[in-house]
Image (cartoon, rainbow over all chains, first blue to last red; front, side):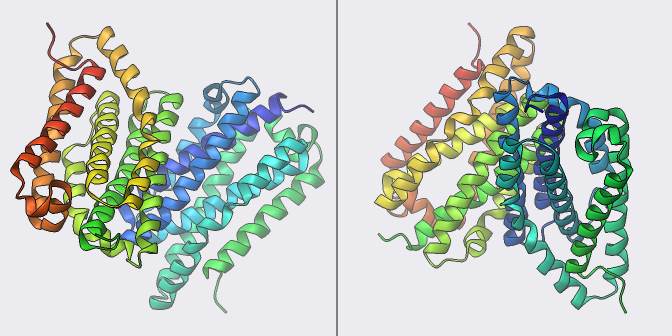
Length: 219
Length: 219
């Protein structure tokens, strides 16, 4: 497999547009929903970091001789639809979206790294090194839940809905781009056991994030 | 004059919030108004650069022992009001706002550098090195004017209105923060000749940008 094989170009394209969209939406959420300037700057920091990832991915596509716009285009509709369906209504929803969204993106990078080339793995390492920037959200959400435990039900539902919408858009994409799906789960997705293991890894990682946020069901 | 004198803290505070707000608004404009993904990425690039400037200014405030949030707070209302009054209605208005706005910010950095300390001058140099990122707007606007010369009147009016609103907010700020005004135009603004020269420099720089955009009155 070479870096310019169609599956890899799809992978770089979907990740590039995901980062660009995340950057723009997080910036919008920071501008509209942050209650203090320090909060606005902290979410702005997450947004700017996503932009840095976009730049890395775009430059990689360009260096492979691929037009980044063409590589991203097939994924715009699904990713924009996800953002439209998961528009945060308040600061806590924005924080959870940032933390869960950056987390899911990180999971995708990790899955991709398992099945591609050494140079893609190196790129993944570069991106994952920044992942901790969204961690401030954990502290803020936990403090809010301590102050008002009734928030928990609504925010847990919100996190579940976001992930549900992500899986639904992901399935649409996998159906439309079999070569991308094949890259993530093995040849043409025939390896059912491997699909099962991937879902198990994604579910486990998401569960850990819910626990960190204090959004798992109480005793 | 030391770096932690009240005038300098005001200057760093107003520039920091201006950069943070510019970052967030440009990102929003890129998400909502860019006609292509490459355009969205190009305006996103300008936005992310502004965020980098914000980070430099915030870190400088923190290293002076000043809470960045406190330093920015006095300027939030005026800067937010400017953005509310200059919300672009289409892509060309967004491009002109980016180019003119980044340009005016650069003019302020230059004025500040004339009257402050060596370490502030070094910071200004760092920020101005990035200024060329908004240049792509010039090419896009000129191409649009070539394709449809009737755009010129509306866009020239838009640029004038933006600068008018900036001057009006600037005057409100100067009245409310005399120590900041003193820093930019000399002791307590008593040096009328210096105020005149500063306005001449600002007007000249703005005129050059209008010319670059092709928005000066035709022959």
